[in-house]
Length: 299
Ligand code: SAH
Image (cartoon, rainbow, N blue to C red; front, top):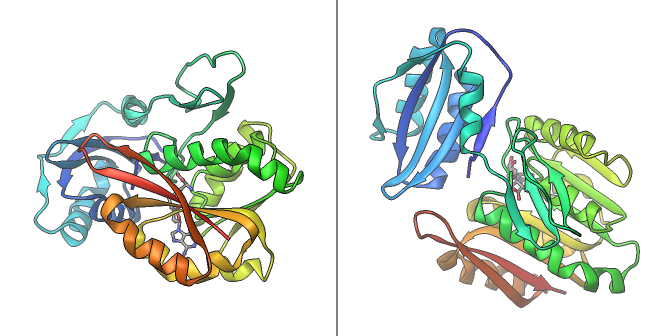
């Protein structure tokens, strides 16, 4: 589910283009490629799969090629292209755009100009090395749910609380705080994600109400929340369903996203077995025509 990620580095760079079949492979490849020294990744969805453009220092080429062969054996790899030193750090930004989530919310990277409509809140989200700029349907749908649920959450608890499982860039947490959440716990297994989330909180002037930490659900003890959001791959989500359900307060909600339409049945059944009822869903297709779903479950 990588979108566009970059670290700040400079020097002589190569762009290596890899075409992979699906987002699971893209995610693994992105992780391995960063490990091997890749400094920035741009993802473009095409009709024949996902195209990843890896920007790596020339010196790291062999390691990056080895990472590609390991993570995505059989993937189509185009010959690497040397790019002007000054340009690479701007290249990855080209794929990112402002995302109009709803009449009330606009999400944009800091380097993309966009003017919010009257009454529209604006969130500035830079990816760093984390996922979640609002451009991917799974993030978009999760943000739509937070927006749509806000009045119900306000009436459930004027000081409503959010638990953000796998916060990535922090985008869902920051949107919730914009929409009046009082306490937000945001965590991620990946320290680069929490770093990005903290930087984005600062960029948006959000200082109070947000706890960001590196770790897993175990760290949350037995607190309950008015809303739990989890935008994860199905394979990451399934083992967490019982624990997620346990953190939803009575009449509270969970938004489970990152799912393709045909993955939902299993997830709904697991959430129902954990005591939640299925109370809605939102869908959105990506550029490949794959339909992503964000489920609303309620205790
Ligand atoms: N919430 C953001 C990012 C979603 S990407 C958005 O909606 O766009 C999913 C994130 O979950 C990744 O950053 C990944 O590192 C993290 N993640 C995956 N499994 C996790 C787990 N078990 N606990 C915490 N974080 C997890």
